Image (cartoon, rainbow, N blue to C red):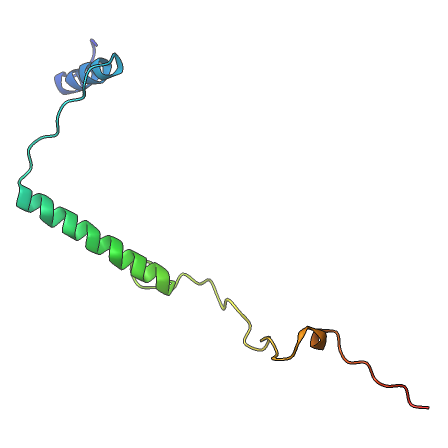
Length: 93
């Protein structure tokens, strides 16, 4: 424990006590209204992040796409699965 400044020394003692089985210290008091405001702000940031994520954008609002994600020319045709392989022409005699 020697060689630490007083604040670090206290933290090291607390961590050692916890490691040896002591209960960790309680959180410091925080004004309830300030705590509510922090939680509300965090919830709004999280919801806006989720909203942008669903739209495919980052937290600033720019698109995440690196380029066109699909080719507009190659769309599925409305035919069945056999249209991919072509059609058999009847043999003319």
